[in-house]
Each structure stands twice: as C-alpha cells, then as structure tokens.
Length: 280
Image (cartoon, rainbow, N blue to C red; front, side):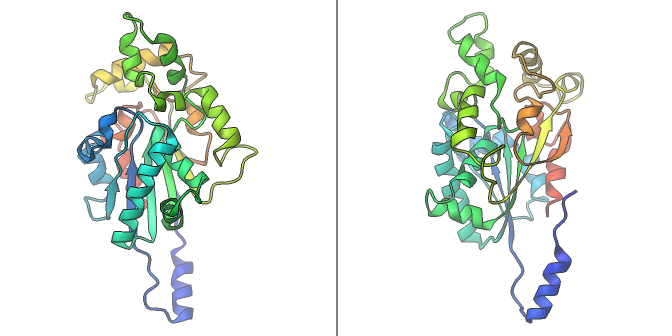
C-alpha cells in the first residue's frame, strides 16, 4: 500500500512555524472511451455508477469532479476537455492534493495531459495540483480488441462485437496496438526510452474474464466480454477488453483484479472503489 509522508510534513510545519500548509485533497474521475453522449455529465456519472463515486469519495466527504468528454475522440481532444474541467475544479475548490482515478482510455487521456504539461495553462494546473494518478485497465500499449474492431467493420454476423468495442471511432483507432506503439515512441511519456511522467502513475490490471460471468452481479456485458476475450487474440491474461501487459505498461503496479472491464469501473463484483478510497 502506498503511504503519504505525513510525519515529514508535520515536522516541516513545526520547524517553519507555519499555520496553513495543510493540503486540500480532492479526486477527479475520468471515464474511458464510448459514445459522444459521454460528454454529458449525467452519462459520465452513469458510466462510473453512484456506488462507485460514493465509495471513492468516502460517501461524498472528499471533494470530487466526474469529468465528462466525448468518448469517440482522440486523446488530445479529450485531454483538452478533461484538463479544462479538472483545472476549473482545482481552482474553484482550492485543491492542492489531487488524486486522479481513470478507467480504460481515460488513463491514456490523462497520460497525454501529463506528457504535454505545456500545451496550455489548464494542463499545467492539473499537473501541479496532482499527487498521483490511478489507472484502471488503461490500454497504454493499445488493445487487441480495438484492432479487432477494424476487421469486423460492416459484418452483420459480428456487428455486435464492433458495438461492444465502440465501432471505428477516433478513440478506437487511438487504442489500436500499432497506433499506441507510435504514440508511445513519439508523443507520450512513461514508457521505455521516453521521459518519465512528472507525477507517479499506479496501475490496476484485470487478469481474468471468466469469474464475473458466474456471480450474482452478472450483466449482459459480461458474456460479451468473455466472448471478446476468446476472439481478440490477447497474449495472456486480460479483462475482456484490455490485456494485462498493456494495463501494466506504464507506472507502478498497484494490484491485479479478476473483475472484468465492465465491473472494474464499478464497486460491485470487487470493491475497487473502496480500494481507491484508501488514498484519503
């Protein structure tokens, strides 16, 4: 478990005789790719679900913002929207100790922000205020499911799979393994041979798709993800949408989970939101 250096902070405060050096904590949640309607606040909240937000914020006692952006766009378009919302939250609330929790493509979007802190003032504000970033199932090396979406386009027999991975939107192209290999080489920080990210990233990876089908929380998406895992050609463990190796490609591994890609943004099959709340 990661620990904050509280003793050091108390010592510094005492030595300086300061009275107002305590940080104000907040949390931002950044969803993954999906439809254009994810730019609506209500849709973004539904993506995470209220129980997840409640868990992450310790029953809404931690100031928070649920970011909402067009889930069909490239990481730089989404990054501008997300950075603007987080910067407004940070400035309005006086947040100086921000934790960012991301799911899926949201982890790539936030890595774009942290890889380009000089893009605009909002980007730098986000970077300066952040303690660290937690990424859940982020396709940092791309996703074989996104690769598959391109090959299935237009097929009446496999159209449901295309729908599941988001069709051929800009965000789906962004998540292809070949596209992410290019971005990792030239545009993004945090991978081998590239500059380090300015703040720490901690990753959570899904490593099993089967168990979520046989429990009381099963949804239709669980069956689809299990099927997708079987045809996407993932090279090893995965959550039905993102392979373990890709989710763990950037940052430090925090933990692995058998919650699939549908459940790891919820607080039901495994209490991931409860784990995230340990930051506060």
